[in-house]
Length: 131
Image (cartoon, rainbow, N blue to C red):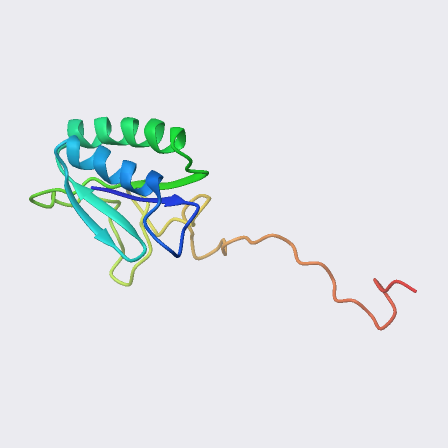
């Protein structure tokens, strides 16, 4: 799926760059749907890539000053989720053979609490102020 918007916007009509972008998508064989905030077009990957290349070149050539573009891959059948790291019964990821792991360090153990960066001491009434 390709979603796009061309600018500058015109309140009194349909700008040539917008018509050119839509035509590029349609002629590439994509199913086009024009909405209030942009246009979406669906088709296979080769059609989408051909449409994007043509859309960018031709809309800039006829006056677009900005093109917002988003390309998404839509699967017919969702792929099964990739297995992740094992989790403890209450949530955090576990190390392969032991206790839960910290986000950026070794596994936590009862005698070694998780570490965190040192905090700055609190300011006293006049510290850190500019005159």
